[in-house]
Image (cartoon, rainbow, N blue to C red; front, top):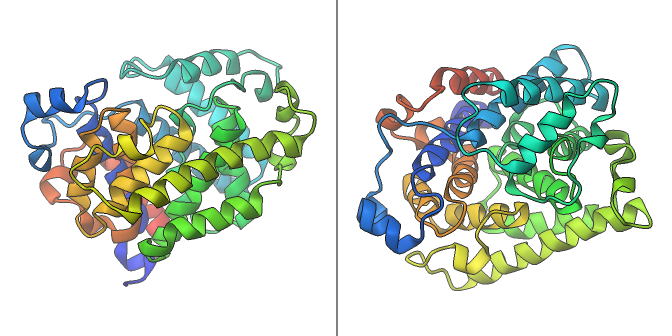
Length: 339
């Protein structure tokens, strides 16, 4: 394994995320027979031309810009990050390019974030654990120089600005942690075990410094009770993933094993399954993730982030990487963190 810097893990992850997003964009909301009828064998799925991305990549770029701006001002803390992310999310919500089938939770929360003088916790949709929480969290797994506490707290905070359900927070934290481990060269064969251990270790830890009184917006008696609900649901999803990898079935729709991916813990598990079925074949992993009956663009964008973090920028065919929408922004941010 080459070093993290030389393999360009951040560039690989961000470009891979966008490629998966673009590949899954046309197949989202279709079942597998419909996808096969429209596009032919899944192993031959071609990147659309032009290769348009969805809100998944748009919001990833928003989080990345917010993180860069907050870190440029000094030590990363909750107030700086919340202000930066809030500003980026409001700009995204107002943008004429916000026409790529964005999720209702994100739209509702972003409208509420615009209200002056109210804490961001008032905007958070504590009943929603949609995959919008973790489809965009990759930058937190890639940015260097963060402590474990900063990475986990920031991953949960960026999720909570829109999706305040405890499972959304835990799944975002786990997704960022998985990307971090893969970028550092962790072996994929042991990844699920490492994520399960991380979930158990953090099961009762509520990041009050980052989340404030968010937990009081839900019906839980204590912050510990609130957050442990989320980790428990993620642990159930990781167990389904573990079972699926015991008897891998590459030709079967991954959603049948680990869920359709509309919710955060399933997007994590099914994106990981798609990657882990084809660790050394990143393009095949993206194609498998995009040819699914669930939230294909989000599943494939996560699979692309995992594969790119592990294999680096060279994982992706040049003719694909060169025509992805926002390629310049993705590569510039990746180069900043790879350096």
